[in-house]
Image (cartoon, rainbow, N blue to C red):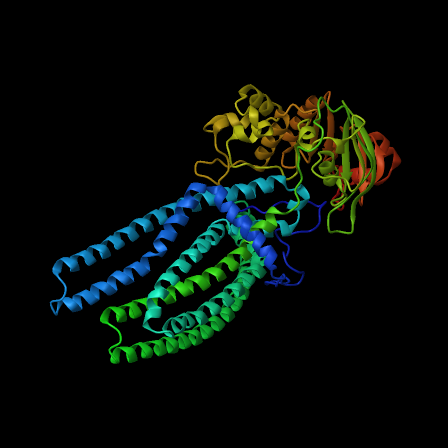
Amino acid sequence: MTVPPRRDPDRPDRNRAGSRPDAPGTSGPKDSPAEPPPTAREQLRDLRATLGLVWQASPRHALTFALSNLLGAGLPAANLLVGKHLLDAVAQAAQGQVTYRALLTLLAAQVGLVILGSLLSTVQNASQQLLGDSLQHSVSRRILDKATTLSVEAFENADTYDRLQQAYREVGSRPLGVATQLVSLAGGVVTLGSVGALMTQLGVWVLPLVILASVPGVIISNRFGVEGYRMLRRQTHDARVQNYLGSLLTSDTLVKEVRLFGFEPYLLGRWRAYYLGFRAQLETLVRQRSAWNFGASLLSALLIGLASALILRRAAAGQITVGDFSVFVLGIAQVQNTVSGLLSGVSGIYQNLLYMRNLYAFLELPGRDLDAGEVWEGRIESIEFRDVGFRYPLTTRDVLRGVNFTVHRGQSLALVGENGAGKTTVVKLLTLLFQPTSGQILLNGLDAARFSPRSVQREMSIIFQDFGQYQMTARDNVALAESDRLNDDAGVQAAVRSAGAAFVDDLPGGLDTPLGRLFQGGRQLSGGQWQRLALARLYFRQASVLVFDEPTAALDAQAEFETIQALRAQAAGRITLLISHRFSTVRLADTIIVLEGGVITESGNHEELLARAGRYAQLYDLQARGYAPGTPAGPPPQP
């Protein structure tokens, strides 16, 4: 089941449950702006790249497929020639001019050609299947490798998901289609040349007329194939939205809320609105294609009829034999199929390369090398934000402006502010998931930009507000923080105890129990239990910086108290950054920063901020009044 992501208030709006993924006030599909067609140079570049993908996937199977195809391309002409001689020989045998042994010799040659064709076809099909499997794995691996290099900002852009979906859609058949069609083109040239040489002996106009009869249908197929591609490209975003709407109706985690509020009809209505929009475009395309196909078939029939009339006139004049006529009758289908295959192959390569451009567009997205830079060594003793600002790409609003603070080893820093104030962005900058737009982040007095993000991140451990719920074993959910220590039972058990996740001992398989409902045998946990495992994952990594983003949001009062006590113990001798809406947790920090609109407006410890009677004191008072007996409920705080 697909679970919608939780909303991150610090990043620009994008598709989420309960909001319209398209323009405000609309409920159906919308067309994306048409992209200009690729140039010939771009197509040649993509063709070379695609052939390179095919060859690298499996050189042996690619070569076997090509050779077997080319060898088989000469068989149609050979079959026509042997068949012609066999028919002429039968006609002569009736007059006593050919012996039985000569007939058997021709029959043996015909049977041999059939056997050879069957063998080549078997080899060709086997090599194509194995090549396709290798290619699918190779391209899928390239897509996944590319995904690991994309920055976090890229994943917060809906266009990235469109490109990723388009890339995955082409994995199955497009690269192989380009290669097979190119090989088929070469084979078609061999077939057409050899069969055409036989048919030209029947008359100078016969072959051109048969070839012309094949052209209209291919032109129509090419035209509407391109239109089909453009239609799918326009529908990519809307199809993703429709799939998302369908996932809301089938999600195991959302079914309770959907049923309770009863908005199934609304979701179904929007889902069907997208379908009807797709259907209207499809009907228009099908009607136009059917009309043009009928016209092409009519023209083709007239041209074949004219060629047949020319042959029959020569037959009436006694200028051709029975074998010659068989070459014409069988050759018509062979030439038409070959010409259609050639023209369709050119068209197919063009269309497949259009789809391959989707794959290359994804692979060409700018990436971020997390291992680039100097390797950080040792513990992080201090973190300083010096006039740090941040703005999301393609936006005009600064999420953070002029942020300054310093925190040292053994100290804890808490961030407080309303939703969208920039708290989560600070965390992403501190953990080097983002790079600041302006200013500097200093680690132990050194510019963090000098060091590879991966090496710095090894000294950091975090629990995000939208923490991961991995449909794996309980052990994996903890030890993924350092995957090279998956078998460290003592470390996993210690992290579980620190997080108060003793419930894992009661699971059927203990730490080796599969979790979640995605796979058979999985055991579902409550939100609080999942959060405890996320805390255990944080504690499992022996990091010098701990980041807690709403670490007690899903916990009850007792669990929250136990977690805070564990947090106190774990924070000793480390740098701790804390984000929480609960002041019972925030007040633990040595320094509390209040963010408003991406700017720090207050800073100090709990007592100092209360004494200033500023925004922090107002928020604290609002929350405290909610616990005071007999106090009227005020508006809910938004720290």
